Amino acid sequence: MKILLKQTAAGLRVLIVLTVLLGVIYPLAVWGISRIPGLRSNAEGSVITQNGQAVGSSLIGVDPVAADPARDPWFHNRPSAGSKDVLGPADPSTSGASNKSPYNQDLVDAIGKRKELIAQREGVPAAQVPADAVTASASGLDPAISVAYADLQAARVARVTGLPVDTVAQLVKDNTSGSGLGIPGVNVLKLNLAIQAASGK
Image (cartoon, rainbow, N blue to C red):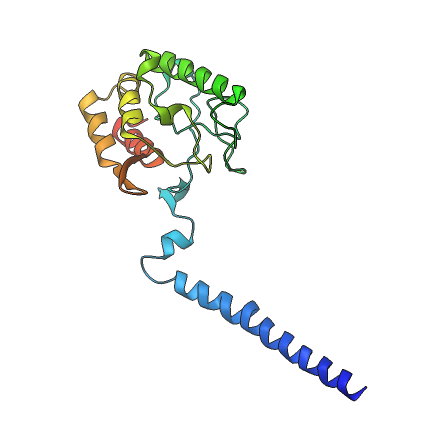
């Protein structure tokens, strides 16, 4: 009985120490580190604000929906595997890849349909549609697109917004940065905000 009480007391002491250490001290230490200048934005979700209002995250791509598809002024993200429609919009409440192989007929059909729809939207042959425009990322919520996909959309955005093509091209360049292993990528949310500011729409 004495041994049992001794072991129970030792177990309770370990439980209390670990609860305080891992349930209080460790979370407070992590929170404190996240307040260090330069880390705060990432810790808070890299939220982008405009006029004091949160408009999105630079880390989460959510495809904008045009009220009138015939007059679509936005650059678009990559498609999301979790979307009900082949082109989106993405559902930010769920993320993940489709996990379908390149030989899966559903995936092949979806890619073909996406290519056809994007080619029609941009007024180009299907052969000009880049691969990232028709394939979902591993997260399904990639915030960036390739420079090729941004360039493909530039003419339509310029036409609809009334901005000169050179201005749109410069805004694409201004919002292009190396991502991952240094491969250039264009952050769609930041680019769309720049387009909105330049066009006054």
